[in-house]
Length: 179
Image 1: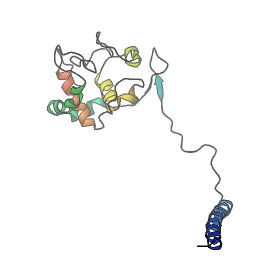
Image 2 (image 1 turned 90 degrees about the horizontal axis):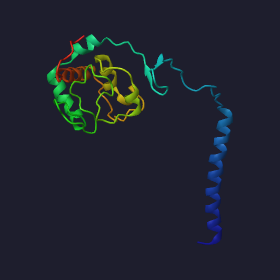
Image 3 (image 1 turned 90 degrees about the vertical axis):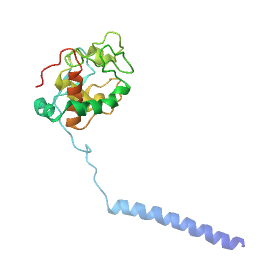
Image 4 (image 1 turned 120 degrees about the vertical axis):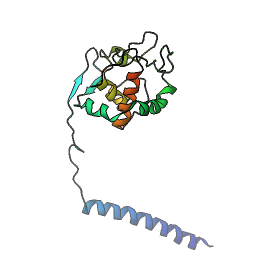
């Protein structure tokens, strides 16, 4: 192949590249799209800052806990709790694992196990584990209490959450009456 043939090939490649770039510039000029000042939609959420901390934010959500708890059953909760058993003990006198022991958890103060080192968020969250609190936390722990060390993704189905809560409530010295 002589140098003249090589020059024609290189010139053809350059012409195609220039043509593509030129057509792109022309198309931008012809089909100009005006961009909005604020992209996307703004969603308004009622939020309330928990007492004691400025970094913990909770979303106020009206939940009919009685209807949710009616969906669950203890036997199903025992099966679902096997996911939790890798990190938590539910037996009376059970030791803390990666997470705190959960025997007597319903009605207990959040961060109430003395020999477990909680995240700052949970340690300063001045509430008790009620049916409503457990339901919100088990739905998605990381977004319910930002800053928690619990990395579990959560239980999406209301029936699963209700079943686990009923199972945890049953594993107590004095189970709380269901709502």
